[in-house]
Image (tube, rainbow, N blue to C red; front, side, top):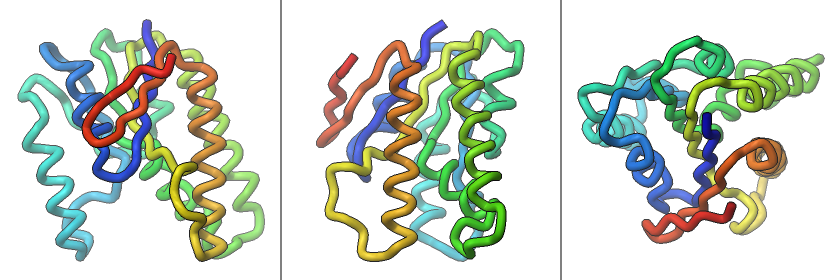
Length: 176
């Protein structure tokens, strides 16, 4: 079993790098972003490009239940794309943006569930995530909160990864 975390900024080549790591065989592709047709043509185009790159032998699961996918007793490797979109959706579902009472408790539980599944999975898994610590500080409270939450989650996943990669300008470099 191998756990690989592939980090990078927007359009850095992180998804392509992760896809190449699992090329040549079947895999389960876990798409964590919002489905297309949500009224955002640019987002729809990104999803279309990702779908067109996937090999026919890959199964696609559009879900935020990444922990459930990692727990499945399936020999196929898993590609999770991406941890950042997973976190944004979970923060939305928990009510973090609205400062709903109890939102932080629910978010912490969901994050712990993901990290536990990452640590304990018997499957080979490659996860893509945005590297958020190298950019300008976000101007909004919610932007800073998301950056901090994702940075902490990335660090935790990296701690429990066998390999960590960083992509810049389409070039993937192994950090560990």
